[in-house]
Length: 138
Image: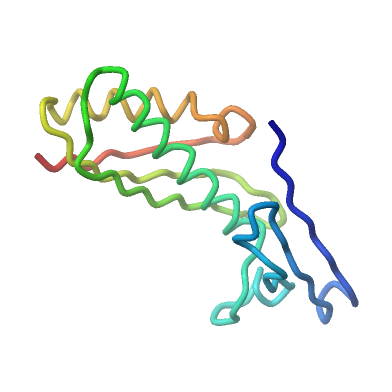
């Protein structure tokens, strides 16, 4: 299996603009630029936001997979991924998940999220610090 995305750019770094398109069509000529990357309140996306979305989705699915293997069915799992930058380096990703799962304790849920933190596919390809926190609702 391969997944693809395409980027187009025209113009200088600060004044130019680009479009991102994904194989699925979910992103279709979606705007990205220096301004959408480094300034607040500008409509469009940026690589760090897309990385955060990919990591949040992957991590949440990994938690769901572990719960499924244990015969548990989560009522809900909600994750926020925060990608931190210092200068021109991505330094950390922090994952915050809130889950409602019948049949386990908060401690068991936290252990499951720590396993997913280490083993989701996006975590495995990143060579930066990744942390997580779990919020359990019965």
